[in-house]
Length: 202
Image (cartoon, rainbow, N blue to C red; front, side, top):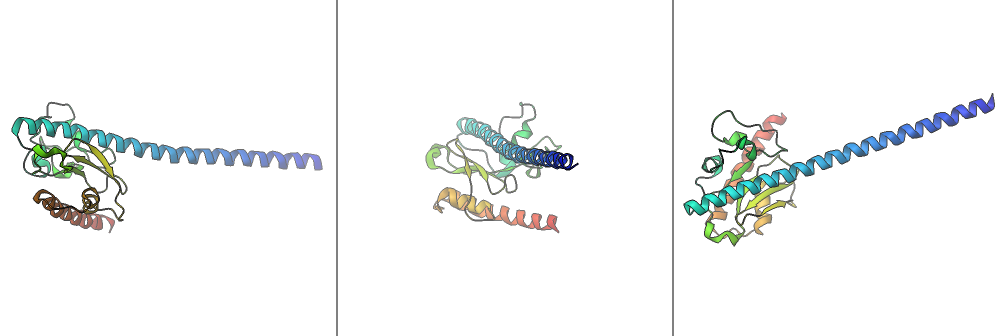
């Protein structure tokens, strides 16, 4: 009887260890899947900004200037409507936003903010043409520079704001009218986000 009891206890212990190991592996798989999914979403987001940057560059070469004005009004001037699902290009995969129902791109259905006014003749200036809106990624922002680069910015200050992204990207250099305009714009966008976020959390 004692031998049988001991065998039963050993078997139960082994089964518990196996079950624990399986639970651990499943948890790790889930964590890794979440991390991989977020990474892929961020990469897709950066790729979309790169494509928008190509369209902005083509527009600037044809017209001699970037589209005007800021936001989706300027982005609507880009010649990309011939592409199927063109509105999805302006939606970060991490964003809960969906394409709008109208023929034009709308602010409420766009994951990015475009700044007009940069001089295409000075594309080596490092100016930011498009900044990702808050809420797409957790304390991480993709930005499109005037030279066509797409970079990821992780602000040191938390909670991360669009202003902190600009300050870090420009090293607090707002010496040009374009960058001063950007600073005022992102402050407004930050206030709108905080007001909207506060309302949703209540």
